[in-house]
Image (cartoon, rainbow, N blue to C red; front, side):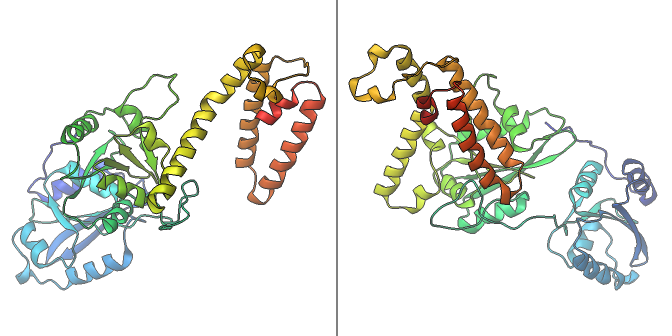
Length: 389
């Protein structure tokens, strides 16, 4: 849970500015800007982060402020935003904690002499990449967009697909220092209320200094798991159409700012083997593809230890599978051959990730051929083991 400062703004304009200058490193940080202006004959101060503000929007807003005369100046901040602020995303607050959090998140804070509240202008823009299709979650049909690192863009991608008033996106935050934005998305008429309440309570009880790994830090904090469990407790997706489909199924989608993927709850092993194509193909085709992925997943987990078991007990091996039996004698036991090959494959994968794209494919092919040929001829590995891997 993020502890909030309950200190309120003072009725004195000078005291408010003095406190802001003490908390924010205005002189030390080049990107933290303080802008002094006069609005309707009253002193005013802007605080904002350079790089987060839309210059064109701020230019038009300040141009309208300069045209305000002392006679037209409202008596309070509420009247000021209603009559003199030509912008849609505007709010007022009376707490310094909200002001500082907003300034560091991107919106501009405006203090005006004579007002005991601060005006918040959310005219921010974040550096963001285009919403291209994810590399690891492609589909043969359907849309070609994907989540990005900006949470507002991600919620808009789902809102574009579900135009229903029951779609609720609650915004909260976690991390005492990072104050990372978290959006809990659900369909109010379909979600499991007990699950939703439990999830929101867990997020509220999170006690972390920061979410340095964004989504993964939140996942580990919400549901502790044993260190020897390699299986995920969440379903992750980078596709907004998949997240929208899960919302319509009554599930909860969690978005974390700075993370280009969504967490989906509740989940099961059947959800883990789903992909976007299941939603775009006919039922028969989708079921066939899902069964195929389930069999491959089962084979990936169990075939290697099963093969090792049969090789250690050849009398159990059926005659139809005699061709897979290891006949040659080598210097390394079979179990260590598998471990070394797995380590070698991971090493090749790591090398491919850190190699320029134009070189990664040919080098990977050459390395695989040379490694396979050398390993068999050297007597370290059986040819059957190489074929099995």
